[in-house]
Image 1 (cartoon, rainbow, N blue to C red):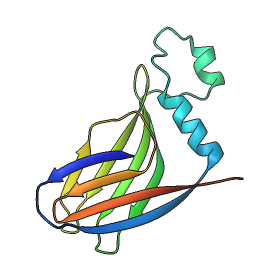
Image 2 (image 1 turned 180 degrees about the vertical axis):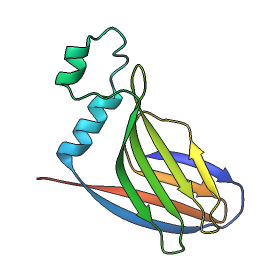
Image 3 (image 1 turned 30 degrees about the vertical axis):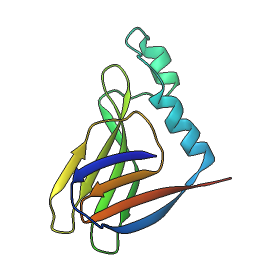
Image 4 (image 1 turned 90 degrees about the vertical axis):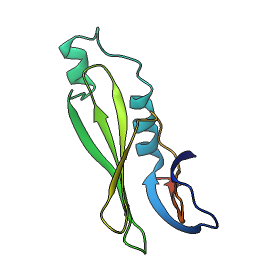
Length: 124
């Protein structure tokens, strides 16, 4: 589980959302995140694998019952893939987390509330 801590407060409320995702998609994303670097790859190899540098694809987005949201994007930089996680509080404030280079359940400790996204991996 990927854990982020935003604030310190006692006795938090827990809000959880389950997100269905195919086993094939989880495997694909994890494989891309494991590429250390394609700096030395030629354009033909990049094209064959469908790698488009400097781009992002939306993987998942969830809304919690209090209005908070979480978006996870798979992005491709100049040399590798990375994850981009953006959390929005119910009041509209945003937090953009550093990449973890993994796709897994996500827990955000926002002090008074713990937000959890559980991936429900499904067979095709």
